[in-house]
Length: 162
View 1 (cartoon, rainbow, N blue to C red):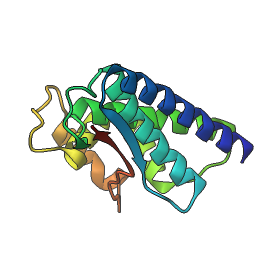
View 2: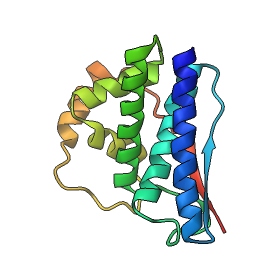
View 3: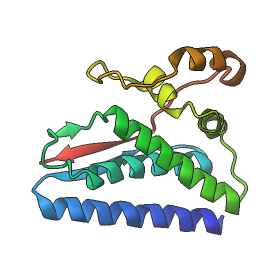
View 4: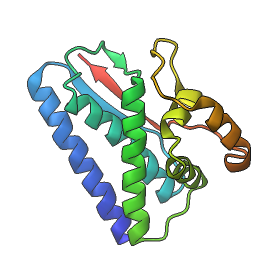
């Protein structure tokens, strides 16, 4: 539990630094919204996803250009946030016992190298241009034996306030 708290504190610090940098650049202020979950494992998974989104906004200096309201991530941002989520999850599970079925399934997706296809299939926005090189038919064939009873989730978002 101590490792879990340390991981959460580290994520909050990363987000605070990113938000401070963004706020200093403009009057726009990004706010991380994370849903509340029952287990520490779920909370960690979605906090890390949210920090991934915020990091993408910070790294790409998007705050000034984004309209006020809940940000709809681009394909690249969504992939980045889920990669970040998986990285934090991998580091946390290397140090402590955590269990969350959604993340187990996400690890399967990543190990099969289908993360981009996963994001495209489950989270695509109508305004996203189709990325080149997606292996959609391979992924669709892979799903039935690997993602049974899968429920796509998004437990965090970034809101831009002006």
